[in-house]
Image (tube, rainbow, N blue to C red; front, side, top):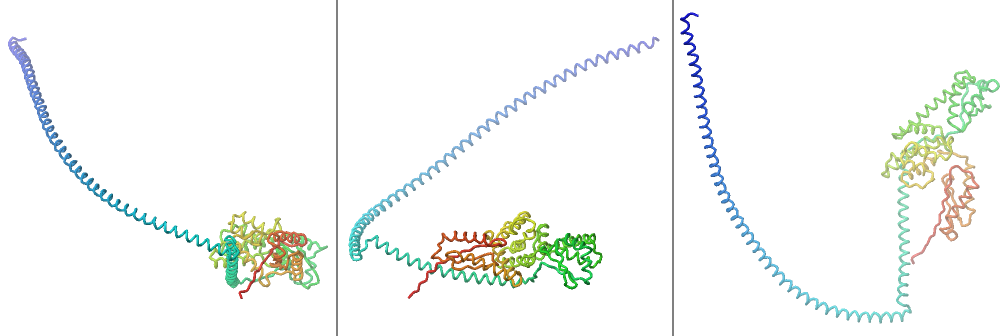
Length: 522
C-alpha cells in the first residue's frame, strides 16, 4: 500500500468511528426524548381522566338534585290530585246520602198510605165476603126451590142441559160438514173437469187400431205356389224363421200373416215383400231376407224410441230404455199402440202438471215410462207393472217416476200428485173413442159375471163394474153391514172373484157404506 493512502484510510476509519459514535449518542438521545414524551402523555392522560371523572361526578350530583326536585314536585301534584278526588267523592257520598234519606222519607210515607189502603181493602173484603155468603145462601135456597119444582138434582139438570147442547151441536156440525163437503165436491169436480178437458183439447192424438194379422199383396196367384215351394219347404222355412203363420187361402192376390207378436209379424211382412219383389224364393234366400228384415226392424225400434224421447222433450234417458220404448211401437194393448198411448199419457200428464203448478218434466217422464214393462212382459215373469218398476230402478229413474209406474193401475196407493196425474192420463187415453177394442159380447159377459158374483153376498145392495172390469164398486146396506164387517166382506168377495174368474192383472174391490140422516125444519 502506498504511504500517501494511509492517512486517507485513517481519516476514513476515523470518520466511520465518529459516525458510529455519533449514531449511538443520537440513538440514546432519541430514546430519552421518546421516554420523556411518553411520560408527559401519560401524565396528561391521567389528568384528563381525573378531570372526566370529576365532571361526571358533578353532573351526576346535578342530575340527582334535579330528579329529587322533580320527584318532590310529582309527589306534591299527586297529593293535590288525590285530595281533590277525595273531596269530590266526599261530596258525592254526601249527595247520595241526602238522596237516600229523601227516598227513605218517601217510602215511609208510601208505606203509611199502603197500610191505610190495606186496612180499607180489608174492610171492603169483609163486606164482600158477607155479601157473598148472603148470595150463596140465597142461591142455595133457590136451587132447593128449583129442585123441588123440577124434580131434578143439580147434577141431573146439568147432565140434561149438556145432552141437549150436544145434540144441537151435533146437528149443526153435521149440517156444516155436509155443506162444506158438497161445496168442496162441486168445486173439485168442476176444476177437475176443466183441467181434464183442457188437457184433452191440447192433445189430439190419432188412434190407430192394431190387428193380429197382416196382409201382403201378391202380383199374381202364381206367386202363392212359389211361396209354398216344393213340398212346402219355403213356407215352412218362413214360418220357422219368423214364428208367424202364413195363411194362403182363396183370397185373390194376397197372403195373410197371422201372429200375436207384432215384431215378428213385421219382420215376416218385410221379408216376404222383399222376396216377392226379388223373385228368388228358396230357403237360403229366405234366411237372408229374414235376417235383413230383423236388422231393419231393430233399427226402426231404435228410431221410434228416439222419436218418442225427442217429441216428449225428455233428456237423460238411458239408451237401453229408449230401445225398450221403441219396442212398444210394435206392442198393442186391446188393439191400441202402446208407444202412442205412452206418449199421449206423457203429454196429458205434463199439461195437467203445468196447470197445477207441478214440474211437468217429471210428469211427462212418468207418463212415458208407465207401461215400459210391456216391452218385455212376454220374456220376463210378472205383471208389466212389476217389470216396469224393476226397469226404472235398474236405470236409476227417480223415486217419483218409480212410484207413478207402481201406482198407475192401483197396485199401491198413489201418494204423490204425479202418480195421480199418470193414473188420470192413462184412463183418459184408454177411454178415447176407438182407442181400444174388445169383443163386445165377451166384454159384457165378463162385466156381468163380475157384478153377479158381488151381488150374491148378503148385505150387497148393488154393484158396478168399472174401468173395463179392473174395479168393482159395491154399495152395501148400512143396516146389515157395519164398518167392521166391510173389511171381511171385501176379502170374501175378492177370494170368490179369484176362484171363479180369469182376468189379467188385478181387480180392485171397493165397498161403499153410507148412512144418511135427513130431517126437515118445520
